[in-house]
Length: 381
Image (cartoon, rainbow, N blue to C red):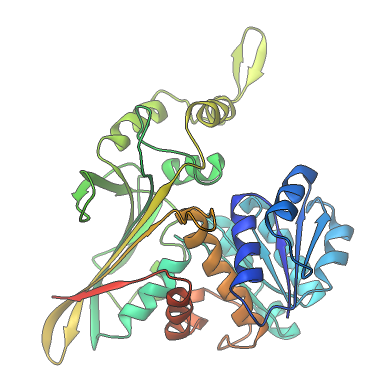
């Protein structure tokens, strides 16, 4: 199979690494980006005759059509606002398509292409990174193990192994994505109904063995399509982001004074957007690409054999010194690569634009994670 990776940043590199090194069915990989320096870096790090690097600006329609047309599947690792147009191009070129997602409005527009995608016989599956992404398939995996399900609670976070700065955080993906998660509404199921909750609220403490005090709080995007999928089936579903204790209060203060605002503000006779300035400051202030952890926890509560049962999935992944891949790269880009390959092999249960938790075989998906040494610890209560 031939797979196209759009975007040569951290996650694009992770997807290319997986497709070249962990995926025997993949015959060729093309990575495309508008920045030649990023392409050169991937060429230097991955020396393979199966890899081709192409200069491409994904906003250029004709060039993107021409390139996507030659592949069985495409993985978008570019900013989420390109994904609707890229999904339309996927329909035009009859190319299976998935992305790292992260924005509910964009995902809704992609899923509206369901009939067109089904007609041409392809899959479009948004939100295939970590969260949303991997956790959505894990939610389906756990749910199938109960006779009936009452609750799903998802907690996910990327943490530096050696926390620095007052925020105890490092940049592991796009700063725009981080700000979106912190300021947009979170969609959850409460008492059987889908409701929206303010992000950076409902802070709770939680513990992982060997880690200092942690907290989790509401953020947007993590549930993706899960509330729609599980509505009328369960009573409670939510997603919170994990950070070292104290992070939420400090970051929320900066949101409250307007640093994440998108309205123009006059400064010395010039109009600036506080969010853009703040984003640049975060990129300058926060460390990046240092050894990290990714923590994942899914708690299920339901009925089995007539009695109440609970199930917990825990994942603790860490920076891989041998490959140089961060935990965030592994747990975000590897799931997208796995799904791109499942689509190309025809292993998705139906064609169209669909939520992954409804069409991806969770057993096969978990087996592929395990093969990549992303281990799930399971415990029944």
